[in-house]
Structure formats: C-alpha cells, structure tokens
Image (cartoon, rainbow, N blue to C red; front, side):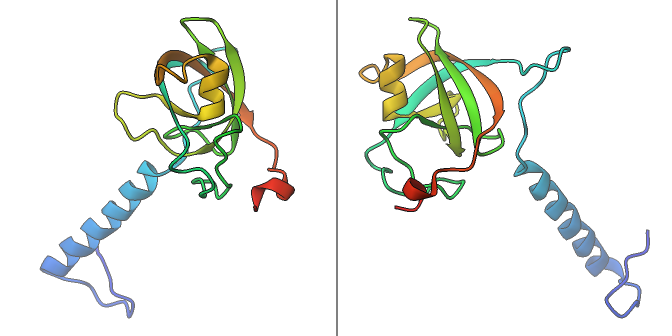
Length: 154
C-alpha cells in the first residue's frame, strides 16, 4: 500500500506508519461510538436483554441528556449504553412483574454490572426506588417520537 501526502508525494518510513496508525485509530473509534440496535429474533422482534437496573435523579435533574433533551427525574426515562436515541423501551421488573415503557434518551449506566439506568419516576413505578436496583428485562420497541418542545427546552 502506498500512502501519499496532500501534494501526492509518497510518505516514507515512520511517517507512513504513523499515518496508517492514525487512520486505523479513527476508524476504530468511530465504530466503537456508534449506536447499535438490539439483536433481533428470527421473526424480526427485538430480543429482550436481562440484567440489573439502577436509578438516577437528583444530581442530574434539569441537566442535558446525551440526546440533548432535558433530564427530568419525574418522567419515565432511561439511559442505555448502545441503543439508538431517542427510543421507546419496555422495562419489566422480574421480581414483581411490573412493566412500564420509558423514553431512552441518555447514555449509561457507567457501572459495569448494570444494564440500564432509569429515572427516579421509572424506578418508583417498577417498585424498586427504595432498593436502588432490580433485575429487569428490557425490550427495545423502536424510535421515540420527537420530544414535546414546550417541556424539552425548559
């Protein structure tokens, strides 16, 4: 492979290796930060993921989410590491069977043993606000509608 400079001259030795390494690093970084939809079943439905959910609220209330929306701990919302944003996601508490649909509009959780972070309201609705975490099944429903602009830019 011949690597050339902007003016078309061949790049030699160490410069060539640095250029190739930089290009490969950029491609790898771009692929790691991409949004990945969940795995689908043979019939096209999305497979649920099972893991531990936790909740967040007071410290981030009123701040911007990764999607640019304003986080409101009193709304049903969630954070996931890779699923597209904003999305609608069904969350089921496997201990008590409670189910809700949340707007997934943020990135997280940042603890390795967690599958999803939920707003305080979502944790309350699922019955684990006091415990702080619960084993859940999470199913991706698809893209969420645009946010209500009256409340999204408070």
